[in-house]
Image 1 (cartoon, rainbow, N blue to C red):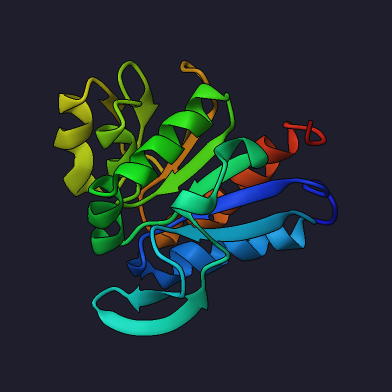
Image 2 (tube, rainbow, N blue to C red; image 1 turned 90 degrees about the vertical axis):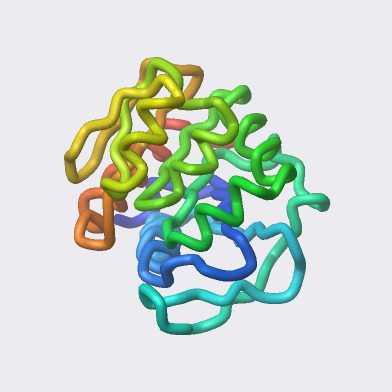
Length: 189
């Protein structure tokens, strides 16, 4: 990866606590290594407390809060996993609105593990095929989506391209796929 994402801004949407660290850092590094500009967006300013499963890990500085962010300024979005992260995001109205606006604007989204809860809450999985951590299977199906158990799933049957993966072991395929799909966006408008 070199400059496939040069000039592209990618929103990394997380809650302020509970994001799975490797599911934040691996895609972040993939975007940076491809020349893109990742920005951490959370409900509140300050920092995001990451976790390694149930243990506290590092903190990361929030670039912008949801209330100070315009989704149209971004070319793509990534939603990392983490049980608490996914659950808190779906309970944050600003995060739900941000996600809906990104999809409506036809911006590609890459969502892993428990991250799809935000898409379920935003009513964005109906008629779409995606994967996730297995415990979300029923939620996705109840929301009208088709759940599949695969390393990475790319769905183009909605308003945008949706990339999903199940878990940290899927990160190499997830990151390679998101760079390829995001690069298809071309230069920002």
